[in-house]
Image (cartoon, rainbow, N blue to C red; front, side, top):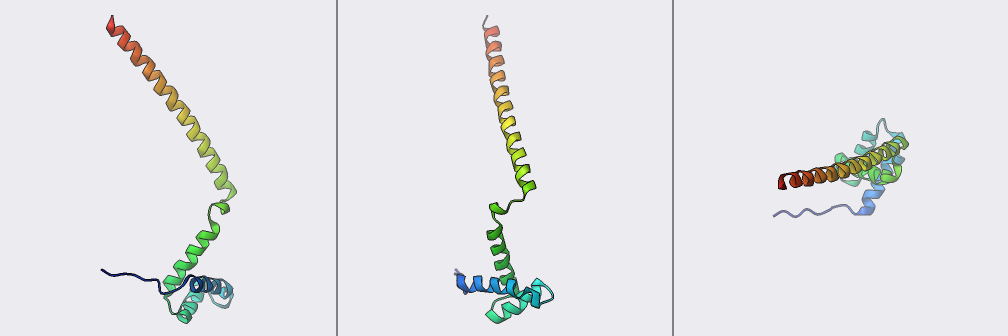
Length: 107
């Protein structure tokens, strides 16, 4: 059984991510900055890219939801509420007609 260990501490990862954003202007692309910094700290550029994307996702989170996303979410929540209400009405109507059918056959 292989046991994976994390070679880099959280502080090293956070510093590497900061370095990418700080030195982005010094390179042609973000990827070039990642390749340069990854070589200096001893990880692969792909690992550093993953760290940067994870950090960007943490920073964005639900608080960074765009206005159009909020409006769409509100619309979808309203639609769900209406559909639940319609389902409840249909369930009650089917129960009512089922009881009426049973009463009719009982005679």
